[in-house]
Picture 1: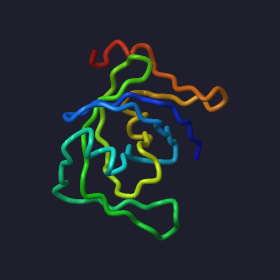
Picture 2: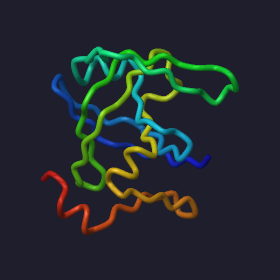
Picture 3: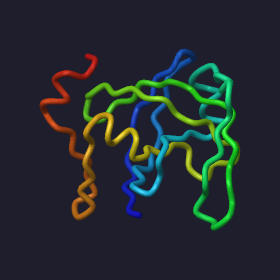
Picture 4: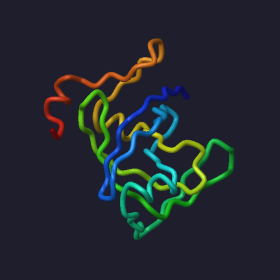
Length: 125
């Protein structure tokens, strides 16, 4: 697992906020803390909550809510669903599902994020 932490602007139905966001190659889903999520968008209760394994062996987390947010990296507008996690240690985490969706690559040597220019042109502007 490798991580990069960068400030990103998030926008939701209730407002916007710049958040130091963890780009985590070990996380499957993108997640947001309950406190931050409630200030950005209306939480949507999942019809069927999901349980995910945590870094602690044998420990699972039940996720009952999600939100949809736009976020910006170098003025490129991206969008995704974020699982809302009460007690999350970070305010926001981007996971590999988001990386794959937007073809985001992480350059750990230079602590930077790379977005394919072809994808950036097709992204919502």
